[in-house]
Image (tube, rainbow, N blue to C red; front, top):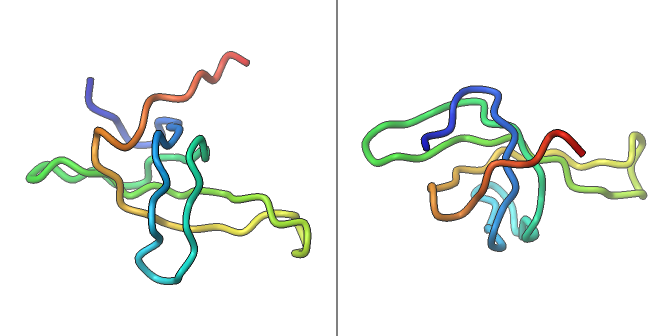
Length: 76
């Protein structure tokens, strides 16, 4: 099943951020903000806890392929 705009996902593997040296951890939650068809991929906004910052989160935008994530269970 392909992801759609605003779907909630969870990463299955660690993913290197394209714009910094930050490694996005496995099981990070994110929201699909853009979809690509060829090759299939998704831009995802991810919030990583960082209690040293005001608001307690650091935000990243990463590109993921279908094998790098699952759909998050939003019923929890």
